[in-house]
Image (cartoon, rainbow over all chains, first blue to last red; front, side, top):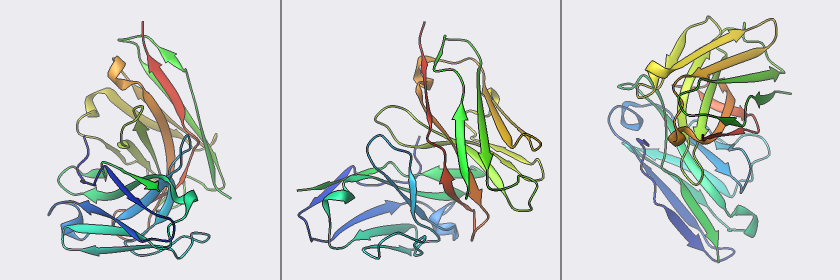
Length: 111
Length: 122
């Protein structure tokens, strides 16, 4: 059961910009806990894409950016490329559950 | 460099107990702030956090599965073990272990194993 809500799918043409929202509540994102984003390519394990709301690990292209406001967060992909076709998940911590929560996941399709 | 790898049965029968082992390298589970977690993903579905064990042996479990889960560590072997009792077909999933970095508020799963698919079927 996912506590964080994401759109099931987003799509865009190569070169376009797409955004993925992640909506939480006052016990997770709204409580000030950091939001992290993972990219999961088909048949592979999730890979950390954005940590601490806005930070990119070494090696992640700057086409990927994150933001957070209130009880929501967003992941933006600019200059969309074919290799960006994947599932994307947000993740945070929830104080009422005393544990970690993931988003429902979003499939990005490059048209 | 941090690596993790899951191992265990690929097929279990309903009502059986599942035991999965995560063998890691590149870090020590005796270092303050370090933790290892288990996350699963049913086929075609979202990720679900299951359990976490800290360097000081503190443990956290998903409230919905707490009664069925036990997480332990063997620091001498660099391993974390997850047991899940009373397996059901709905527990069919790929099970991942991950290194949790003590970054910011809440921490982040920055390194993941490749995952192991467990099928529950008679």
